[in-house]
Image 1: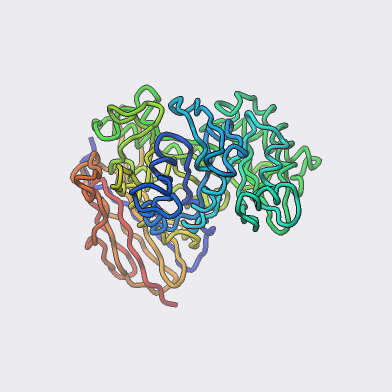
Image 2 (image 1 turned 30 degrees about the vertical axis):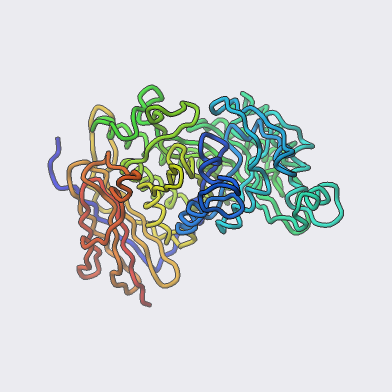
Length: 511
């Protein structure tokens, strides 16, 4: 085993702009699954938990603090069995349904379209609505878009007004189904491409509301699925991209499983070998984004159609004693480091990648916050989002790596242990850095050229072990602290990173 001190050296030209990092790469996902919506976002107006119109005040405040840019809803697999009319009108009159995908529980539809869009308004986030292709109809989806976005005297506008909202909402992002290769209908790519073209055609732009339609793309590395969707758009346009295209983006899903589904293991009780397998799997996101981008570039070299990763994150076994269908898992420092890897990959691919949504926001999978009755816990992953908020809508500055000595090799595979991103906006730059090495500190040296700069505040997220996590009893076991490990040496920023850590350094920029 190599016991030398891991080190990364690179050059960054602060006067050379790369792609802008869309704030929507920091998007979120809330499905009717377990305690994400109910007990997570929604407690009802009569709850003793502090709320605004039934929506938890503490959850809203926590998410506003990390500048949540968008929220995807109602699924996920739930989207393709959700019929929107069941979730509008007086709550006491709404029909119930069985949530067959997630726990086989009865859903009372008390949280529906109006509640979701009020939540987005409280969060200051853009809604991303996922439509039902799997069990719905073209007409049903078309009417939902009209209900959401059309003003004036139209059938769905009148229904919305009767339900208490006269003005339409601004809804830009609209998903045409979810996982049609699996829970969304078990279709072939060709089947779905035809249906998606049809459904998207009837998702109309009403007034000045222009939809950004997102076609449901593949699972992980199914590049053939992406090619089928891109080829469909090209063929509709006579071998050139159709303008306007039936959809403006193609999505894909990628979960870090730590090897394979039967080796997911516990979120907090894992071995060093489990940790290494996780990081190997986390880094695969780089290969997969590049693979889908290459396919899209062949048909769309100007990147007019965006790539969206609208489900990503870690997926572990549920916590002991919880409903297996609720996907409730703890969130350790290891999860935060996986997020650090993903964000650096997202930033590097910001030319094509326009949105990403972590799964899921509250109480499910790699959550931002965990609730327990009136209590709320911020997870280590939450803190990565908070520390990285300065990258949202910032201009990226690619790091030209000149020497990378950070690498781990074992039976689990090989992976880079040091990664970094640099971006700037509003007279400041943000440098984020991750050291995945379990045992060894690492040094990052970046030659920052092209503009005058001086180091500002630095923040560190780490803990004694990667298994560390936050609980109601110990909510700050993994929490950011001021960091004194960054210094300026001539034109270089030198950062000494502890083992298994994530850090950010703010730079004040001159001319």
